[in-house]
Image 1 (tube, rainbow over the protein chains, first blue to last red):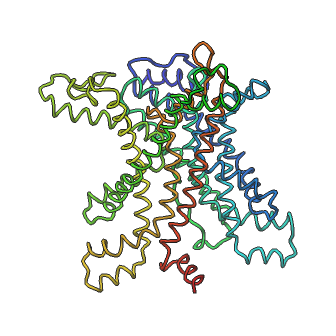
Image 2: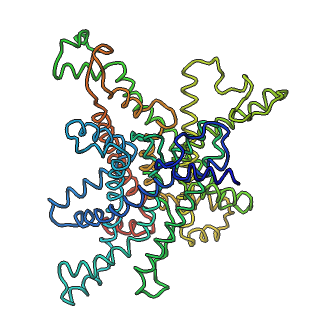
Image 3: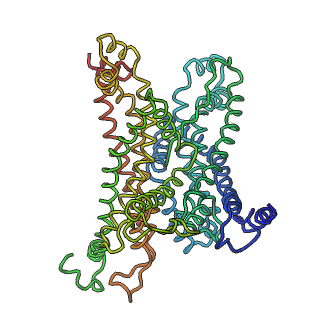
Length: 269
Length: 294
């Protein structure tokens, strides 16, 4: 137990470069595996949270763009969604990494983007914006006609109609699907350190460390289930938070007609 | 490839590019596109079979079989799939070797797992240590296919299980009223009727499967990602006839376009298939088709 506390102080923040510099090399204990993989979760949460928050705003904008009648706005929005939903995230990561690398050659201002911290975050941000935009677009299309007609009858137009009627209804309808997108985004953060972006000084995410242990011990039956456990916990937390938000969004409805949040993951992207 | 490619240094422009894109290594890159298609061609039916087995087991009246089916379907939820890919490749490999070890050399004194080593007798190695290179590559590929099939089988099982429950109860009752047994109802009504409900989910799964193919790279197969990285890297004049700076960006850009085209074609095919399957079904889509025809 004493040893384990020591391990936690040594490796608890290893993934962000605080604590022991060398990773354990032999005689791996269960405690070390739990600590390091848990420490890697910091990255998964960092990528997931920031990309989700930033992506939300872009997604709303793109969804409105796709619903626009003006082809000059609609076409770019459609293309944005198609490119990010139609190609593998894995390839997007590689492409973006090498793109940033060559941009860095001509413009030094791009050099932060070649690190996972900002570069991978940018890719995840654009990717989740693409997927969420499609969800929000679908929700925009299924806003009940009566709602917008009622808004018209009240004389609401433009911004106030959007803010008071269209936007809340869209969110409400899209929320269950958006919850899945959020869970799924957190899962895809595990790809970051396998796709071009280097893990500087072995500062990696949970899967990076799980694979480290699996490679060193040649025993996949310990690190991967630990990783799975952490992710199931994270998924439950996300469902709890989004479920609470779902309740807020639907609080004006009688409880029987509220959309229940169901966890239906969309698998890989 | 072409006769004028003998001296690439003297070429320029399109002629150079033509020669460059037809070198032996580029042929391997194009060949690995075939690997992707082969993976899809083998995995899709296998995964469907696994999924079908899982869904049928989950509906079984025998409790342990039902539990097995439901666990299999549920197991991939909540955990990143890439973790499953990394896990199954080693786990399957070790599992096969472990079984072969116990069958082939029962008199072996030591345990298989010694600290950080996994030791089996020489006869139990898969593939055997003295087998040629292509056997190793094929074995690696088949392991990857099996991994994909297990993971995607669980997803497909989820879709098919839902589709089986979506078939209108009245249709099954009608079949029962005609005196069909449980097996007959399943074979003659449930399975033919479920596809229209399963297709949206399965087509989504197909798109996801296409997008999962680059993960072959992580499983140690020399696929398009591997070759793009190899070929795109900067080449010095002393090592190659075709020196060029770091072109990996263009190679991955080309891959991106390849996948986009693949997705687009699949979408068109799936739409056609859906229109075909919707014909005459008691769904909104079927009703719309009937009205349009009338």
